[in-house]
Length: 169
Image (cartoon, rainbow, N blue to C red; front, side, top):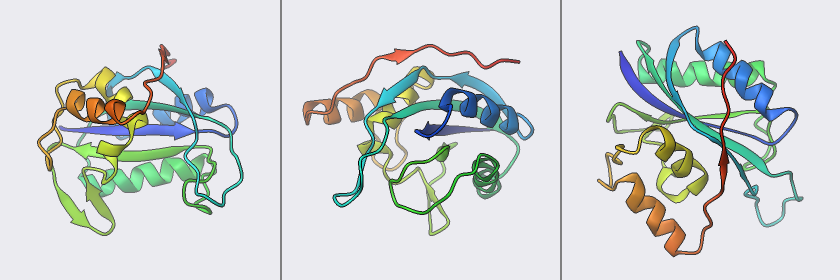
């Protein structure tokens, strides 16, 4: 079994229910090992974008026999089931599933970049990841989660209070 970390995000509809059904769908190909708290975070927007609702973010640790590229395709399939539309970069969405890391694999392929190229600059990814994998070290930079979080908070980013959530069986 291969270990992978997946970030969940969304800001349209009943996001908590969407996370539940997305995790249920992933259970077909993955074993969910750990689930972070839920974090409510301000939306990232492009300079000319309209304001959008805040996001909910979380992370899950899964084990799977799928290769990394197949797991990524599975994440896109689950997003599509939840009516994810890729219209605007950083736009509102029902569900965003990002493959953050797959074992210690480093990939620079256009269709499979691992670890996710913006992981170290996104507190809304690092903070939930810290809940479930405090031991994780970025395979490219060699930095721990706590070091990456410190860099961002020292630069003025704010940590957000998480709330516990449970997947329904």
